Length: 261
Image 1 (cartoon, helix red, strand yellow):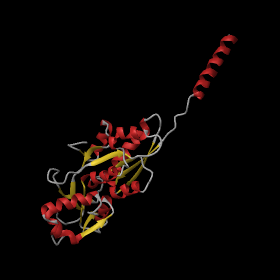
Image 2 (cartoon, helix red, strand yellow; image 1 turned 90 degrees about the horizontal axis):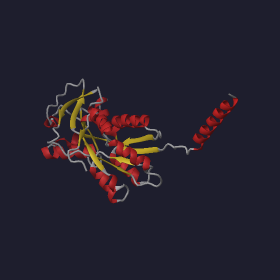
Image 3 (tube, rainbow, N blue to C red; image 1 turned 90 degrees about the vertical axis):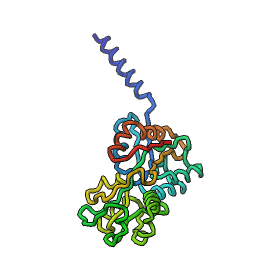
Image 4 (tube, one colour; image 1 turned 135 degrees about the horizontal axis):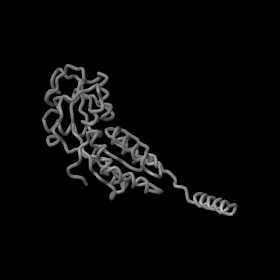
């Protein structure tokens, strides 16, 4: 019996020593710079990814206007993945050799909507109503640089409305700031993405632009060129277009790009 017990102890020590000798799997921080309209969906996807993986990589989100984030990447800010709200910002980084071209994907889209305060009596039944005297201020991301502003201006110019309402525009840093301006009563209306309108109880959609009538909205994502081990970021990038992640994007109101790259 003593011999059997001794053998069992030796086996336990051998197995324990084997496990201790295994190389430890280090976790990585995956830095994702993403458009503010992706906030809730990426937080949910990131949490799901972190809880499901064995290596426990950490998703670090830096959220803001795509133009601001692209500039940060140009200036050398730490980044592994860039998720833009339009193609032009990604195009600019690609031309400068700052992203991994082969990793670039575009599988998400969105829809423009005009919102007003939920308790506001202002009636917005069409884009033309933005030119009425009733609407005095219109919050909008910078139409020169911020994707939501660029998209909205293109749509309003197509309708011949831009010059009529330009004097009413209150320029904001990004789409969430435009939404907040209406929530706070600092603007009578705003043009935002449908996904942004869905997260606020303080606003209501007055008019939703049919996707076929509005500009083509596309969200490209790609790896940022960086030194070191890119494998963790590559794995998360693949996960972003997985069926599991796409279900989360759809739940938050995103549309699937009809012409993914």
